[in-house]
Amino acid sequence: MTAAQTPDMLPEPAITIGIPVWNRETLVRKSVESALRQPGDDIEILVVDNASTDRTWDVLCSYHDPRLRLVRNDRNVGLFGNFNRCIRLARGRYVVTLCSDDVLRDGFLEPARRLLDADPQLTVVSPRGLAIDEKRGGTFVLGGTLPAGRYAPGDAIAAILWAHALYYKNPLNYPSGILLRRDAALEQGVMDESMRYGADMKLYLGMLDRGALAILDRTSCEVLIHTGQENEAIFQDLRHVREYADHYVRYASVIEQHGLAGHVRSHLGGYLLGTYARLRRMGRSEVAAECMQLFRDRGHTLAPSVNGLMDSLRRRGRLKRDGRLTSPVPVTPLTDTSASSPPAVTAAPATPVPA
Image (cartoon, rainbow, N blue to C red; front, side, top):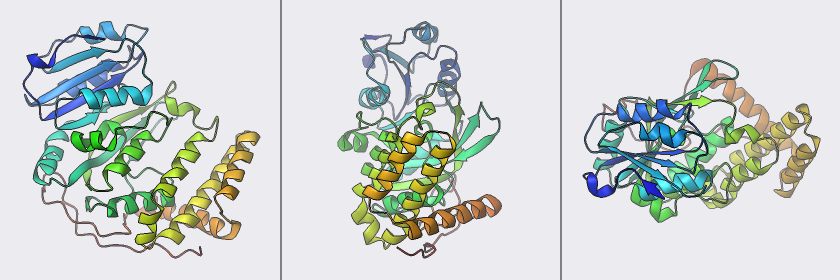
């Protein structure tokens, strides 16, 4: 491993912007420059090159800033392995893992930091993100299915899995726009490197088992959707679906404690049915058959799952029309009004669906 700068050369920062990169010579400049634009002397920009074989390292070495620290792995440690390198090597008490093809928006880090400074129980701050779809054109919101505010430990997990099952979308932002309490991430064991898609979600849920979540109504990052990403292969096998479903097994007791088991189960079954139909339309009959077998293995039955699927379609359409966000658990307005100024939000019960 080589390093362009050593920690001794820099004062201890409050925030580390960690950028894991591999073979991104044409995209990494925007990511690095968006990090360098962030104001403050107590920010560290840590870029970890995962043994790139193109000119990525040369591009990185062309930048000169006292806050910039470059590290090059002597071998490729995998996608989530390099995310973990960023978290472990970070010197800031808070860390954001900015993907090397994404851009950090201005004005997010300082209010997120103030929230973490003021609330020792807070472990994850997730604003909204903006996805830019290079292939299809257009943009869409990331992390936009739960109201802004503070979610207590345990409540946060229930709200996330409820929204995930209902809308078939991650209610948290991409890693590029989420600020974490580094000590809590390390205590959780950082990201599970055996996973292919859901290691970030597994880490965040683990941190929220004992820590609180803040969701902000501001855009923290721009995420570029393009060819060559890991999720391009998402429907080549059923691994992403299994990893998604495993979150619900892991936190079944939390879901049950919040009275959401029947609702979540029917919508998870609906998700599996919808995925099965999509795979059939794509001509991926073998993977579709595997999806239906998973549906049976997890004990789902047809009628409640169809009801869950139809309810999800209705609720997704309603959200698109009126933008009204609800939560199955209480949400506390954030005290830092510069971070977000949401109205008081009370628990909104899930639409009853037969279990």
